[in-house]
Amino acid sequence: MKTPKKIKWKHFINYIVIGVFTLIFSLLSVTNSLDLLQKFLLEKIAISILLSVSLGLVVGFLGELSLGHAGFMCIGAYLGGKAASILEPILGSTLLTLTISLVIGGVSALISGLIIGLPALRLKGDYLAIVTLAFGEIVKTLFLNSSEDSFGGPTGINTPRFDNKYLFIVGFVLVLFMLFVIQNLIRSKHGRAITAIRDSEIAARATGINVVKYKLLVFALSAFFAGIAGVLYSYSNYTVQCTKFDYNYSIEILVMVVLGGMGNINGSIISALLITFLQVELASILTGNLAVLQNILYALVLILIVIYNNAPSLKGFRDKYNFKNLIKRLRKQKFDPSKEIDDEAKWDRVPTKIEMNEVLSLDIKVEESTLKPDKGDK
Image (cartoon, rainbow, N blue to C red; front, side, top):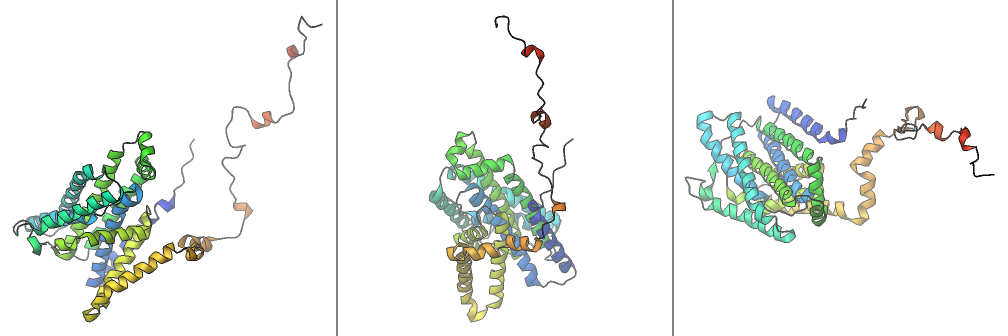
């Protein structure tokens, strides 16, 4: 009889935290305890988490540098926002309209990811970064020079607004869905193949891994969630203008991934939350003539975070006061022998063909036939 597997709660901690976070703020929103700025902040946080974790799949787990994430978001924002503006007179500003727009924006970005991924993923390093950066600029230029009847040209398009009491809830539900997809992918055999490509592409090819297939899979999946984030952005801002989706925005998303740690999903979530909170708060506090200080203070805070995370002289402080060690100290208890659990791999627990007491026994039985001399012996 197989023993039931123990639940690894560390695999579900981000689901639990985000779920509780969403539930608390949902109750506050329904009871009208949140103002417009706080709801807008929550919407921005959900969008940033979608962008940072999806880009982290390419940069952190696949090991490829992509600077075109804002381009995929732009495609999702325009096409999803356009679909929403067409569907709103028919279906109204309902959850069904939002859902259809999310699917259209995500799938259109996914297809774009496949199209650009086929030639681009044959490149590596700086060359791939240049191609993806150029792709983002091409997408922005195409929408900038579109006609007013199609995508509004420089003025952009107007998009419907979902009820701001619930839009951030939809955003965090999508975050949970994204975590479910990406984390299960990474923990599967396909995820091990992806990380093998990151560690050594030559060794991965030698072991029979289809490198092109997995690169396209990761690139397309990352673009899909970027497109979904673009649709949420269009609903959150009423309008979509292509000037927002420039290469600076792609670098800003990359900063969230790097600060959170390469290949660290929880770190990307935390860094996206902190950076978005910092941006929105600085924009609300520093107004008028002080608005010029926003970027300066934002840059200084990022520099301090980078120094803290990488300075060798602070390594001892980081190791002593990091989050994991603080949790261990809070949970530390005195040694209690009665609560110690035996090791399941001990010799007396491992099934063998011969009992261990027989192997260690000194009672050796010798057959009489072995004691009789041969006929030739005298």
